[in-house]
Image (tube, rainbow, N blue to C red; front, side, top):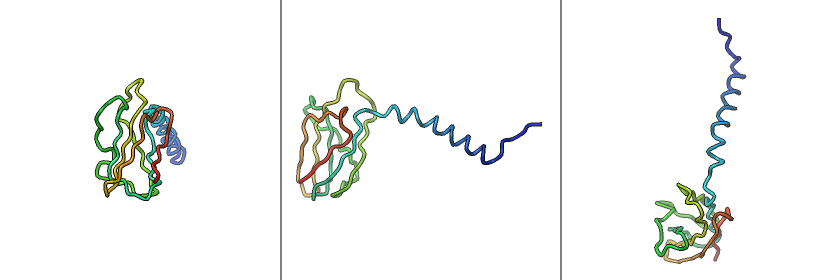
Length: 116
């Protein structure tokens, strides 16, 4: 006859195993992932992040969302391109205001902030 673990102990064991399973995914986060912070008085309608050595802007990383003043959003990369850390960032306000940051080392920073 099998002896089952008491319910609280079994729940604790399942919880502990879930942390072991999730931990490797967290450890492999792309080093370029960052938080975009809007400390301006403008609602950001579009945000573009492109390698500094590329002449064109990539797709809008906000998609259908906007970034209101005093808010933040996490920007994540879907894959790691080894050795590429320098990126240009362009934001466009909902009324057409434009801001740029050039050659940002996203491998060395976790937060990018736009202000007035």
